[in-house]
Image (cartoon, rainbow, N blue to C red; front, side, top):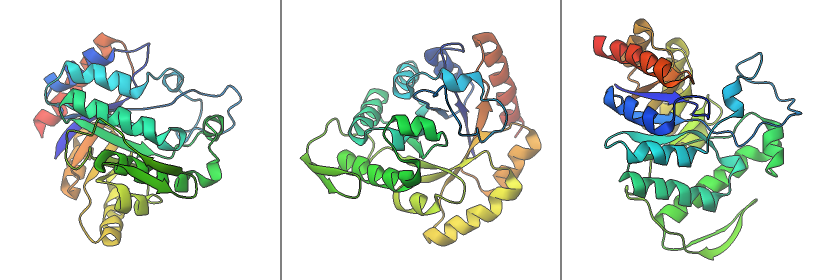
Length: 273
């Protein structure tokens, strides 16, 4: 089982370059960072975590800018979004940004995607929350075509695109891996568009049966990365027993000194096996 970090990069915590270097130095193989374009003042959508929305949600850096900063000071670290809110993003820009990150990093980009929870945030992007799932599916289809085809043409429910060129193409063939985030509901999206399931903070006891359902639906063994995991030794061992491909420890958004101390603690858990 491999180990990585999932976190929010903001203007109040450790910078992305220092974070990327620290994560790689401690032997983690992947860094995924969150995205929120903005938080509406009149938000009515409840935060899935319950209670008051943490300050880090308000202050996220643009993920592709932050990931580029992390990529240029590292050599092996996989860098990606956890998750990009594709329903709020233009698919042409997203395809170009992710492909550019893959080029700059030498083929180390990962595109983690999700549909999001903040309905007011979606609406400000012109996205109808009621149809966001179908919209995300179309945008993923377009992104994949832009990455892999000489020209892309698409005529769907939401996207009407006459033939276009887009470069750069990604370094990694056939394209950067797409991790589809969420619980059981997006399983058809995982099967159709995903290279892995990004299981969001699911404890081992719940994850095992869901992995079996996903594999049965896909007719194959789907790689699973657990996003936002705790780093208790017994929990990590339980994930390994399930055959999880990778665990991403949930790193708090803090100043540099505190972040390095927490990363050392997480690395010690990995070292103990």
